[in-house]
Length: 302
Image 1 (cartoon, rainbow, N blue to C red):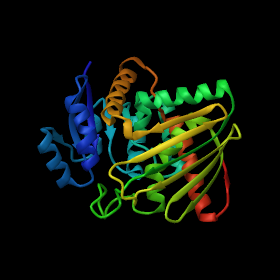
Image 2: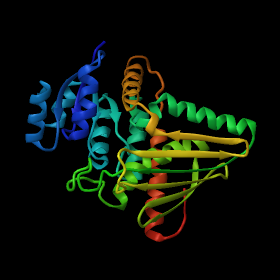
Image 3: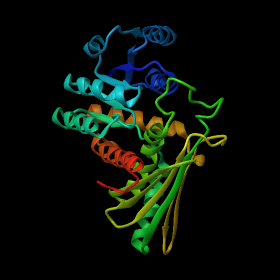
Image 4: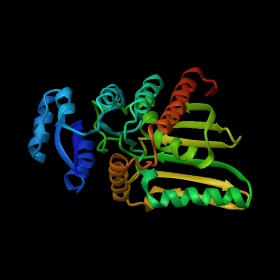
């Protein structure tokens, strides 16, 4: 069965990542695009040789699945509507702009048993799996002591990959919601669920998280560091050694190939995915706690 996919969004991420996944994939067909800007949508549709939809309801009527490549505040309400219409979902992270909406989306997905996948990109790489296996080995062979890491890039600098205006990433909350999901989702995968968060901002966004295990993780985030490529690293320390995660050695195309294959498998066979909406909600809980901690100057209990 070929899965008919409607794309929501006509920006650079939709153009460079989401659309090609279906154009070149053998088990999906990109039938059309809808975007808030009709002119961008028309140009996008012309380039890819697909239909442009004038409204979201029309797109839902003609597809089996919806692939979202829009900001979280746009994605969530449309994804809720799509799930209620019986459509499978490819969701970007974070899945919503706020925790309440993320929970609502996850609840609707559960109620309608919606096939879906959440694109925490780096979780879908074999080297990430190897890192988590190394962490598990540290726990078996001794005691884990904690985790430290950073995710920085130069996307917000002049000439960077992110546009200077019209993007939701250009402030503390933006960079927290853009890089924070990757960083904290992996920290949770390594050390377990988080129960307390404290965040600070200055030259960097800094998140200190206490996990249910009692272990501490510390992450630094910034989109304003002049580096040639994304610098995302996490190190778990144990009394018998360390486990290292580093995206510089990862093949990004493998991540999207695995996202595509997992999505097809969950639609066709109900197979589990690496990251689902429930896990994404816990990541959202951490981010909202970090935002509240930044504003209050105090730690926040989850």
